[in-house]
Image (cartoon, rainbow, N blue to C red; front, side):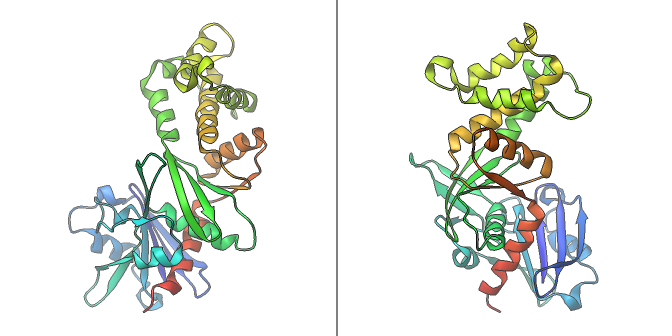
Length: 299
């Protein structure tokens, strides 16, 4: 099988053996936003060149199924398991006489009826569950630009909530007065300052002002000498990740999925809150998820 993880900025393709192991992998900076109209088949041709004889179908996940992608594939409602996700998979014409398949993404609503969506992460969650079939998982955190906190019940995604944690950090660092106070640190980040940010996030009662008041404290702590400018980014990171975890109330044990540097911060924050957590990489769970879906797709 050929497994494809096609995101906004990157395209990754894997040739898998019968056991779902990657025999060969390729990557290109040809995310969906760089592909011209009608250009998706040619890009897929290029990255899978030479794999035709070894491939038993092509299964794609990620933003390739979004409105800006190859085909907008409708979201599947939560709760959803492998079978529900497989039913939502849609084909696209690829080469003459052959098709590729695109995974659907998921949607749910919070207690107030406000909708949420994920696309690509649903496959990663299924992969995480497949890799941990004999171990209990309370919650899954997809660490990143838009961190997703997923509630799982057995082999089912019961619901999830998205937090703009990474994006808010980037915007504040680049475009706010907080960023002007920050200085580049030499060497690794300051774990104690990060921990102080996580601790401060727990002081979010009305009397303490909540997140918006806490954010201004990044500036004043540097301004009045409570911490150096080199520590401001770590403190801000702790604040935002801490507020996210407090709001999500993850159920232990927690599995964190994402790039190692970011995922480890979430694990550290969970540890400070006495919530057991460990990590898996996005690549591991994506391949495991696509492999787990394959038997449910029929011919």
